[in-house]
Image (tube, rainbow, N blue to C red; front, side, top):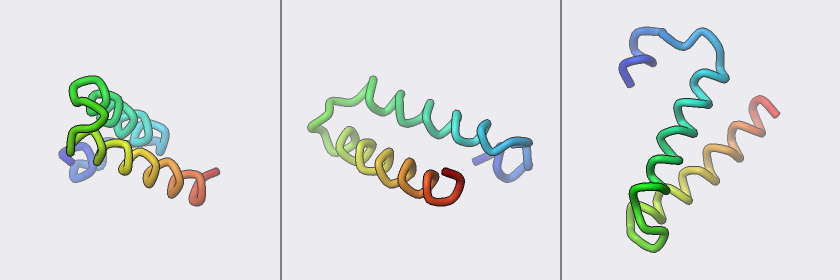
Length: 56
């Protein structure tokens, strides 16, 4: 959030990589069938689908 507000992303791949890191951490630290783990999977699918539509 701070990087977005401060315009610290100079390339869209930097943003993509940060989102992937967040989602990877979500998978690593939460069980797949926990509410947070399930939400992480849904968010990853949504994010990657939207990213592909915009930049694919």
